[in-house]
Length: 113
Length: 116
Image: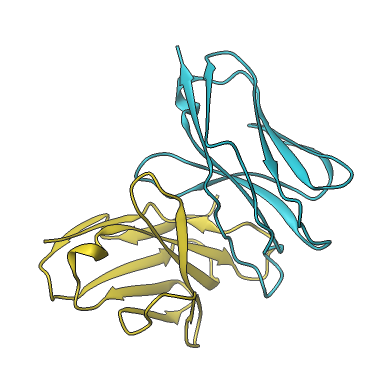
C-alpha cells in the first residue's frame, strides 16, 4: 500500500480556506485517494474520495495533479468545529477484494477564533 | 449515511479478565469489517480484517489468540480482548464495508477500554 506523508499540524482562523497537502509518491495505477476526518474519541468520518483531477462535494474539494503523486484537500471557510485530525489514505476501491484502509499519521488542524 | 454501532462505548475491566466489544451495521449488510486500535494522540492501527463466515486476517504483530475476532453474521462482528493487561488499554474502533457497493467503509464511534 502506498505510503502517505502529511504535515503533522496546521493552524488556521475561522472563515479562512485551508489546504492540506498529502504526498503519495508510490501510488499505484488502481489506487484511489480518500480523506477522513476524526474528532477526539470518535471514529473517523469520510470526507471525500478521488482518482484524478478535481472532486467537490458539499464539505470539501480534492485536487489531484496529473501525476497523482500528491493531493490537496481544500476546506472552504473553516469554522471552529473543523478542528480535527485529517487523514489522507491511498488504496484500492471498496469494491476491490484487497480493499482496506491504512491510516498514516494525519494532520492535526486547529482553527482559531 | 450508513450507521455502524459499537457497544460498549466505554468499559473498565480488571487485569486477567476478558472483554468483548460488539460492532454492528445497523442498516446495511457488511461482508467485511475492520478492527483498529488507537493510542492517545496517535493514528489508527489496523488490527485485523474480518469477513463474514471465515477466519479473520490479522495484521503483522497482532496476536490472534489475544484479540479474538468473530464475524458470525452480515451485521455483527465481535472483538474479544482475552486476559487483558493494562497495556491493552486503548481506543478500539471498528469499521464496516457495505456489501456489493463501491462505498467507503463507515466507522463506529469507538470503544474506550481501560484495564486496571
